[in-house]
Amino acid sequence: MANVVVVGAQWGDEGKGKIVDWLSERADIVARFQGGHNAGHTLVVDGTVYKLHALPSGVVRGGKLSVIGNGVVLDPWHLLSEIATLRDQGVEITPDTLMIAENTPLILPFHGALDRAREAASQAGTKIGTTGRGIGPAYEDKVGRRAVRVGDLADRDVLAARIDRALVHHDALQRGLGMGPVDRDALIADLLAIATDVLPFAGPVWKRMDDARRAGRRILFEGAQGALLDIDFGTYPFVTSSNVIAGQAATGVGLGPGAIDFVLGIVKAYTTRVGEGPFPTELLDEDGQRLGERGHEFGTTTGRKRRCGWFDAALVRQTVATSGMTGIALTKLDVLDGFARLKLCVGYDLDGTRLDHLPTAAEAQARCVPVYEEMEGWSDSTEGARSWNDLPGAAVKYVRRVEELVRCPVALLSTSPEREDTILVTDPFED
Ligand code: GDP
Ligand code: IMO
Ligand code: MG
Image (cartoon, rainbow, N blue to C red; front, side, top):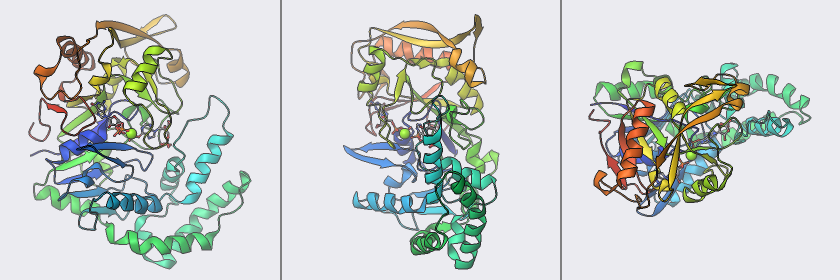
């Protein structure tokens, strides 16, 4: 019996949703522990495509409990519309299958407005390229001790007091940005109007998780974003506003660190990034374009074109360390089919000095020139491969070299968007 944390090992969009969906067959509970609807996770099950943002990818499987933990920031209007969309696709979501921590901070409309206004006012070079969904401002309010939390929706007077506390800050800010004060009464009325739809899902998640653990239930923690977007260990300030790394899984639902047995890092066989910020192996040539086209690299949440580049082993070695990864799931190997030669970044040259990791300051990161190792590509298809024997020799060599360079073994290999096109090497739940 083991509990498994799934985290992105790069800048997000590594294929976490597909792997979480695949692993959730083996789990009793699937829990989100950070981030919000900035995430976009795509699952393909027998040709049907599901796009999830706030809900854990386990919801599409029946008979599991999905959990949204306190580490998440939640837009309640978005939540209800995502539930409605999935219900239209035939997915059953009830208070028996979904539980939301009552201490989860809410994303309110002025958070999104502030996020977008700041981005619009930023000069070139300082824009972060956020998803515009209010994630940063909502987390600021959480640590600023002025958040409205899910449980506050239960009482009109409590809710009004929380809103008033938040607006002392936000009205001043909005005025400064020329946006005028928030319509307090309308906001309270709007929240009360949806409270009856949201509250049946709310409860003490920490308690439910504790009970589950004591009863030997298997918990799958679903990370959003990627370790390079982590607020502490990512490419700051071009990051998201939460801790993304595996250590957050326990805090984000209210369990102790001993609850985590296996950390599975999801690693794309090349590198992508959406939004601004340093990206040493970015390719602005035909190879980059080819990766984007073959990999369909468009953001699930914003539709933006993802920047593409060669595999950066130095970066993944770093995230293997900061998340304490036990194994990796290597995804999108099929996208590399047909490249005559492949490059892997093994370190950087910074102003004439060789580095084996990315320096901390964004300015230094931007000056890092990747040091590459080259490997032969393969012309045969790996798409849809379901066994190690289906892979060309050069593809196996590439996978082995990735394992060596990042210092972590491959536990799973993914060869197409479809759930079943997955090769299991080590079962994280049985390890
Ligand atoms: P996430 O944010 O980490 O869950 O990843 P996204 O869903 O945003 O992006 C990953 C994309 O790659 C999705 O469209 C998946 O359907 C797709 N995908 C996942 N694994 C594979 C794979 O092994 N091969 C290919 N070709 N596509 C994959
Ligand atoms: P999933 O879970 C890729 C990026 C944004 C921006 C930065 C900050 O699908 O992997 P934010 O709105 O969070 O304040 O934006 O983080 N970003 C993601 N990039 N995948 C994601 O999620 C992301 N979530 C946020 O593009 O650069
Ligand atoms: Mg995504």
